[in-house]
Length: 317
Image (cartoon, rainbow, N blue to C red; front, top):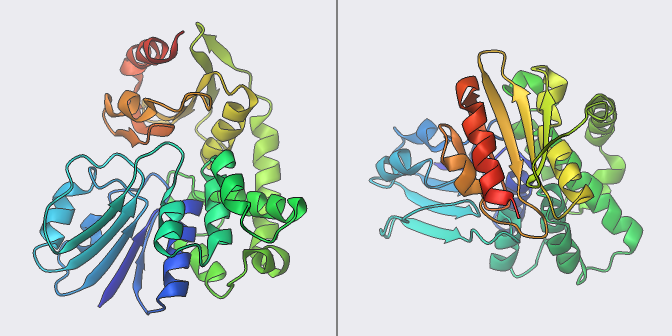
């Protein structure tokens, strides 16, 4: 029995797509909204299986992973903070938390560039534009085609954000199934009806987001606040990435009201200095991520001042 567990964003989808083009097989797909990253627990009772885990933190899934490793083989590929990696023959881990890589680029290295265009799209989706363009330099694509890959990655990433699957235009497993029959991402861009729906939703949601104004936090960066509505949750990632690109020297925070006395927080470290976003967010309950981009699923309102103070201390210059 095979299980493929993957983050519901562009990076998780494109990483799995590369692997399954290289090694096709029928597997049970397990995914969720981007921040639903405690996914390994869904296979805790499985025995004698081969499990692939992509683009979710090993550290956050440690307890469930250790149980699974008692009876299953696991391939784990990721770029988030991992902590200590279990030392067992049952685990093959390729984990690189460098701020200029993503899971799809790690898979690309393992596959020696066989399906690099999908890794480029994923890197764009993860706001790694420099790394994406560097990887794309080896492809026979012109500037317009690379822009198509950029849009593809950003739209796949946009679809992954939400509080529940009901917020999304497509479930991540649906989206993976949609790309699965396309070896060429440009063909998918030009012939799939999926992207037209995502383009329309993206345009409408970003128009609403564009009405928001930033609140400066000292010289550390900018903070944005969104209401607790589906459109706000959907654009959390792409909006944060866009604002980070606007002023690469500044850090950015987006706080979305969860309507329950907590906030969903997205943090982007300065693109000019991709550091400590993961450390900042892990200092608060339900926080995690990577050095360049991280978040907190449910920041209690009473900890907001502490969070903003820590943000300012982390990024003030």
